[in-house]
Image (tube, rainbow, N blue to C red; front, side, top):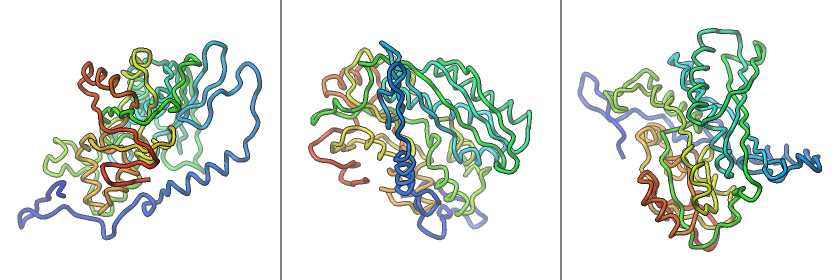
Length: 351
């Protein structure tokens, strides 16, 4: 596999690589330890409100509370270490899109329509220029998602934060009988994939370790390998917001939805326990093969860390999927649901 070539005075040479094989865990993020920590946290939180406002869905992409005929869906997320890339190249006008996207996509993944958003910015010291750039992305993200930014909070925390951190919370609405959890998934259903826009806002710790460990600069343009963008600019490609899925929710009988974020295709485990086989995967963007080669990352690790070109997956009957694909060329049937358990990319099991 060859992602790119670097030129020097002696001519072409192979892409630089990190001294050691990288994984998400060796880069500093162990998703299995993270899961255990989350379970420990959740085990100590047992109080539940009763009556109006009581929870009707927890532990999924978004939580939902009872508001009569409707449920109000709530989710929260941040941009993560993608911010460090923004700081490296001094470009902050897209991370706001990522912040909105990571939240509203989780709402859509349980069948909710996003309606409003609030942000939280923790900063080391106030910087009006950076804040203005962040606002550009937040505004654009809200426009794409058709939601209103109704408020937020900025905290100056010089003893805690170095640089800044950006997170947010989004709410959406969903009819209670329209909540999609994956429980309707059956053997014989197929998986429909939607392309991602690139790396999105996940796995940047591994990506950064690969880039820096191999001796690249985020300003490198690699002789046009990323269509004239630098490595940093490619990594900052904004997370896609899948608003088109909202319009499909009442038109098709969708049995399950997966938002492919941190932990990659392992996100399918949030749905019903079945055997999910991706036998016709979407083609990963160049950035993924670049990271894989320079970081010497195993193929299964790539699919456990990144979206690998597929940011959203819909699970539905084959006849419904074929109709959807005929009417929407960007959608593609990428796999199927079988008896058993596990998550596979062709013959490779990744869970």
